[in-house]
Image 1 (tube, rainbow, N blue to C red):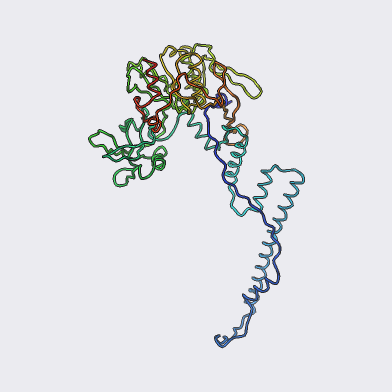
Image 2: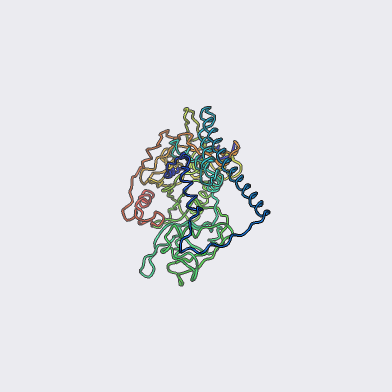
Length: 494
């Protein structure tokens, strides 16, 4: 069994909307009117008496017997070819109609097979069978009513696996849509909120807070403001081996506009950010972006780095965390629990229950990053901490929140979470001889308290809304002084 089947998926996904459809009909083609055909022939080739305005008729030329015979043979061959083509077309149409009629009468074909036969027989368009099958399977799965079900093509499945493993191609930065005031004028920019360690961006000297002002350098530069954020972001992306060229505005620098040309490569993305609080340097802020296979190691690294900076208290921020992989969240929660504590219960459609405990785990392959030794269980249980959540905290991030609540490990601050308490499993179709993969909801899950929150969410111990001014800004651009929820967390830790 593959790793993904064993671990499941806890990340919510919005179902894609259906494409507009149009109705097509196959019209019957009746015979044409012989008199009409004759009239057209006469108008095209018929003779007439010469008028006064016509030029004198030229003297007729004599045609040799050989030329005459060749012409006759050519005409006969042309007639045969036309007749064959017409008859063959009619034969194929009649044969297709007979096959379709017979298949319906015998209930021999499933609808897809019937449609395939009809399209092949009648469609004017050149058909891409692979693309059509993929679209049909996506619609088929969408129609199940499972909001989180999906069919992935082979390419999409490969990209999904890479994302789950934290792999990507780029220069190693995380960015948001933001603005920057330059000489009294506000410009749209791409703000850098994280620079991955060991990445090409770090080697080139990029810093958190840099504002990417333009795509390109020198005279070829186009400003993000003129391009729009999404267009500019697309232009900055690319594959390993290519070069990203852009211009950064760094406020306070002697020469604020800095050109960068950075080679893209395969990188391990950051799923955890760590920093000291703006208001209290004794508090370490650990922002968990999502739970992928890089998260357990990056989470431990973040805490140890903050401890080295004399941080004694912690805020674990899972706002806007959509969830992630089950093995990842099990590993992270094991750091805070005692051996044998319940992490999660799952129940399938038949009522069968499975219980996951905090215990040593050994995986192979890419999941080895989620291994847990007996010594690692409970190593952070005594940390003084607070958890921040909001309406976009979902799935595995909700399990994180619920576990801290149920075991009274930390107070919860923020707003009611999303409410996704269901588990998805991803099945590779390679085993069955097909390409791609199928994701399905296979169970509901419950935290240690056994209180489900699917469709309900988790209400924090301290419900705190962001002010209107703070809510209008990107969460990553907020200072701790602007962030009402962060301020409440710091108050509880003081």
